[in-house]
Length: 377
Image: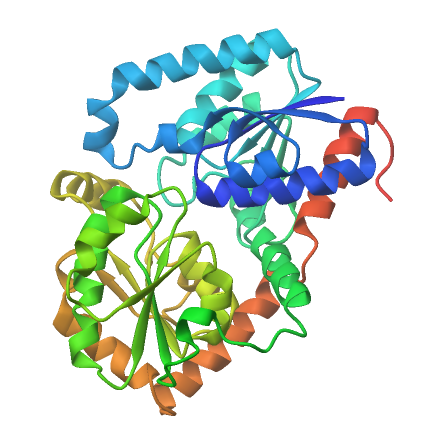
């Protein structure tokens, strides 16, 4: 069968790549094309547009780039019509994917949605569109089933795909006890800095995070750089700051670190699932924040806190994301303190709530069974 897959950011690229690998177990002759990134391409996807070209974050940024966004919709529709796939799999990225879902419905192309839009946080009215346009929704957060049931819409909770990615990493590195080469000559404990995957995030978060270096001389600080941003882009932040950086080795960094400062998003949950104590940071543009503050209906921004329904990881948002607050929240996580021990216990409980690995395989099995009208084993 032919599959068209749309993932619009780094996390979607990761999860869609694992889904492609899982689908191949059920459909070895399957053909995959679509939008995504390097990981999806490495799994055999014919990459038609890279998510780097879709990097519009925040309300103001979207408005400024409306002509390019409209062109993207037009190009995507043309590519889908040219391929005539047996199914389209949408991965998160709701601003784009929900509109494509409506168009796909008109053309009678089966629509599967992997990783539900956060309709429980804001714009719950979008559930009506999901019910109408999405043939099957695969949820990765345990509370989403109850949320959708209020609207009489059945979703499949498949578990969180990050557990698959982390298990793969641990399995492949089980017998590798060596530290990263760039850290081998420095015996100080490591603090990981994860400033985000988009320029707007890094611009706002990294300068504050780097101020930690001078305040904790007994630790070595390592920045997790993402491959979608050039090395030269990061260099302007470092200047004379004694900080190290790694590209494409974030999981190794999380497995070795003592603690982390991490930008809210998928990376904050990855950090939590490694059992690594951390501080969640976020700072948006003034206009975007003012709009979001009035629309979003959630108590926390960190996924770990949302899943646990309580604050297990401190969150520093907007004005609170400053060096004094960051230093205050990070310091007790760097030693064997009651705060660190409690957070470790909470992070273990989080893993239990999310269930075990296997989200990619469960989703692939359900998609294939739906398309072939065969019972799920």
